[in-house]
Image (tube, rainbow, N blue to C red):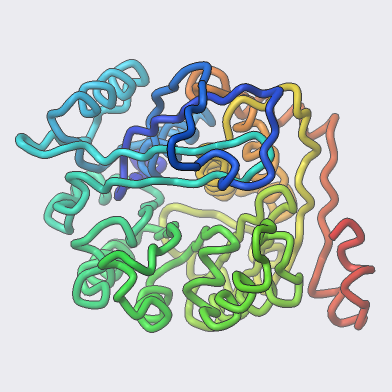
Length: 394
């Protein structure tokens, strides 16, 4: 028996989210950001953010034992982080760095407009392989790492430390999981050749859980750039065809990942797998290989009650947490997708996911009452069905 179900390492921050009047709908960010304009807000919420906090808090809510591994500073944001983590009993491997600022995210979430993140990595630029608690990793079933484009030590030198980290952890017999974040082309991270870098990492990545935009940006950069141009002010997720999503999934599996879970927001989620038999040879998982190997599935998003929506931040991480929790429980691919998409939807209804998010038992019951359609894309492709018949809603 392992002491921890998961060690979650990488980027951790404090998110500050201005609250806008819900009766005011925007169609574009330019309606808000105008020189000399004053916008009255109803408040400002503080919450933990980043893969470490979001995934860690959600997995603990899903009855998993977790160890968090990241850095915070000794500034005011660090004090906020300490308070949140202490209340959640999740301080574990989170270290405070003297004289450094905590990573901060300013989340602009306008009603009617997709979120915009203004991110200051803070002391996360120091977080490197020397800060990984390998003693804790040796005692866990799964190692999840989040947001390398925001972690300077892990993207420098074309991701050499990230490659070393994942190869070491995999040799330890621990299942590896990786999440990403969008790359700012104008940042230092934007100078990295991510398509080539990620191809070196994926052979050591058992589970990859990017968002749709992240998957396209790093696996199909030319197509991503074209979609961005054609999208204009529209939501880019609406512009991506299922054919493109499947191609991104295929490239990820061909590069060496065993399971890829792509989060497509309000459209749903995509799953593709290769040979998962190697995962069962490690001590962390017990998947039914005939159910999991060489699969390709799409799960529709669960319907959203707009009157309950409080906050969209962290929804992708919460979906990832549920997906990983389902895998640790040995659930089949269809139910794992349903748990993930339901958890992502439920995240929207929470200001504080640790206290307000439905736990695993509640979601388990909800799966019996609510239904999200799961389509076997592999069978649909073999039958040569047109895309509109494969995904009727999209």
